[in-house]
Length: 434
Image (cartoon, rainbow, N blue to C red):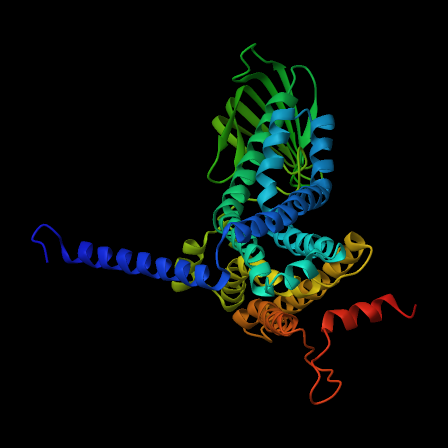
């Protein structure tokens, strides 16, 4: 070993060399299997283009549909609450990763079914098979597309979703603070804050403070307070997500419910925490990060720490496993999408879309059932999160294997003949008698 190379560095170099050798071997194997000629590259690009065009269109439409409900709420904020269009656009951008983790796998499956279905419907798959191209070669570009979608989903799940959730919460706080500042006008009673009626005699042009402040505090029904102050400031705390109205040189006046007791208190400084839920949105959250706001590293560290109850532990473990299973669903959808997509039929797009929706409904029904059982403690969080992927992976591998051999896993005509294709049988049953 070189004297200039420390043991950790030498081990790192050995790992890099081993990884490069492994990648070289994989590429050599792929070249031997697929005979990676110009024609193979042309076929791969053609299939990739067919899938990519459908994928881009579907992911755009599906993400827009999923965002529609939030967009309508944000438009209401812009119209009725005076929030700027730039802020609304930022909010939409921050919300998008939470929907992309669903729209990317779904769009990939439907794109595979539509893309390969179009090729099969035009007999292009049949021509490729007659030319000596196997199903494994046809599936290679699909696997590349699934791997790219899986990596994109992983990056979105591990990094963009936690960042987007935290950025959304901070932006909500900024919007609420902006609404509180913009909504206060001099010589006008403001009731945007829950339980508080605010009046300011004068507001300077720069708007840094209020003068001649009158406040009716009705948060305690039996002891309403009337507060007078010479000056007031709005103070925000990004960590606690709170906006405080700090009063200077004033007095509080309290009368009990029976109108028998009266109290007066003079103060130099007096803080009132404003509840911004009424003024902007009920989605504004406070406190520490939720499980969905954490990265995989943060969740792992939190699970290893002590002092969390069983319910929280199960919830965090379930979220951690879901973050790992979502990216892998892209690869699993590719396995199950290829055998269903290569079947020749008419009405390609509508049929491929219908099969895709059916498979997705089954997958997410299993996923929701597993989550519900895991949350109640009837099932391990790991099993609840991984069971849908495991079931679909086994089914996908079986469908792919029998489709490659043009056999069916359950129907056999005679001991010598080959199995008929399972997707063809399901398609005929869906189509009904002619």
